[in-house]
Length: 163
Image (cartoon, rainbow, N blue to C red; front, side):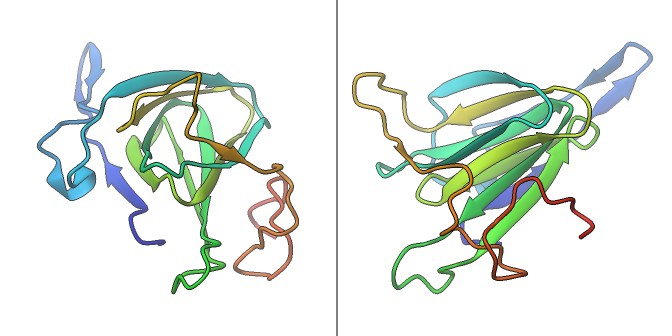
């Protein structure tokens, strides 16, 4: 994985009522490092919808927890001089396997809801969103300059995973 991109399995405490899970704790140093979570957001996304590509240039880190449905989360490094320049990470996660996916904001990143059900995602960040001066740079979801690490061809969000 790209440096700083991490997954962290969450523990479900199951009983006859359902389950309980802690989704983020300030003492999870192996996941958070020096980050402090300052904002939590909720995102509902219909199947097949792509939210990509964007990055944050002022130090924002995103922590995604997909509660329902399934989601592909991708991160791409295009920084000149980086030892991982051109690397693209794909992580598929969802409500059946609770995880936190950590994406450092300096990577181009995005998501796609996969499967037949909408996704419900909580994502937390270490920087407050400022609508007047957002920490966001964007490029098209189908930008041909973002290459699939495995094939060397433009990344295709809609390519079936088995091909």
